[in-house]
Amino acid sequence: MWRHLASNTITFLIVGLAGAAGVIAWGVNEYSGEGPLETAICLRVEPGTNFRAVSQRLEDQGAIGSGAIFRIGAEYSEKTSQLKAGSHLIPERASMERIVDLVTRGGASTCGTEILYRIGVNSVEAEVRELDPATSSYTELAEFDPTAEGVEIPEAYETMRERADTRYRIAMAEGVTSWQVMTALNALDTLEGDVSEIPAEGSLAPDSYEITPGTQVAQVIERMAAAQSAILAEAWDNRMDDLPLDSPEEALVLASIVEKETGVAAERPQVASVFVNRLRQGMPLQTDPTVIYGITEGKGVLGRGLRRSELQAETPWNTYVINGLPPTPIANPGRAAIEAALNPASTDFVFFVADGTGGHAFAKTLAEHNSNVAKWREIEAERAAGN
Image 1 (tube, rainbow, N blue to C red):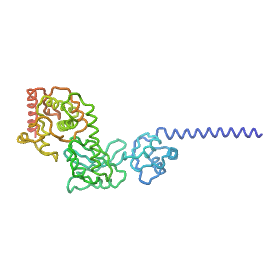
Image 2 (image 1 turned 90 degrees about the vertical axis):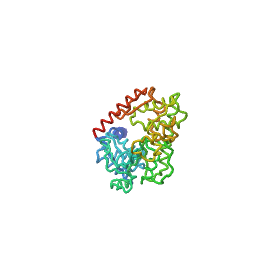
Image 3 (image 1 turned 45 degrees about the vertical axis):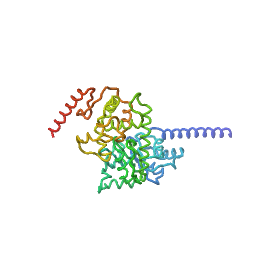
Image 4 (image 1 turned 180 degrees about the horizontal axis):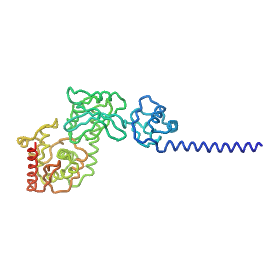
């Protein structure tokens, strides 16, 4: 009898253990397997929120099938105390395991509202926008010039600045001068500690920079300078042989000219080849952007055409008058322009002029160049007549 009871007990234990193992295996599969979410969502986690509230919200939005399994998985992976406030982009079909990782990883918010400060050649803009997780595209909520005197600050801007999960970025365009960058950064109410010394021209890397409210202006400039230094060092190490450039600093000067001469990315190596060929042959560079920089010193936009007297005036940056490169860059070039200056296309071109499409027509001889200039003047005349 006792043997029979013992045998039955063991059997029940085995069956129970097998059942428990099956439940555990099912739970693990539910936790790590593909989730039910059909369209990406933006999950906002308020400060002080716990995993129970997050799991309930995820269940309500159809992102997870079981809040209990979600919480057990987070507990087992020892992440329940690591929940981060902010707006988290939850991709479609994300597993519970991935969602736990996303909401505990930290860092900047990956969706929701963003305040983007654009520093461009001709303008500075503050843009308040919100990411639609379903389309991965932004909807603009407000836009204004933060550097303009007496500008009316949009309510959306003020509202979003009060939210702890709002993301802040500075987007610096290629070809912006250091004075323009410094002036724009000093005007941003998100940053603190104005700087008065203009950073060396060309020393700042055009890029996108994540910031947080209260960041010092000097810290942002230091990041920009460190990034440009790294880009220049890498490009210099990988430069073409036998370039008529004696230092990375000269390469930066040439890159800034290339940057200002064309906005067509594919043209940069060809434009660079023209200036490299001219340097090799001892020809003046004869480029208008350097003359303009000699007039403005990078402090704003000229806003008009060059006068003949200005083309003939002797300034350190007038490449119609001086031979070789000017003494400093004339703007902050991007990576592509720096790489083009140090790895120009192999051409015999020594001339180029606008071709009417936004690009340029290149020429090896003066006769070819004069023909291209005549075509461009015809295009200009037709456009003037059309207006």
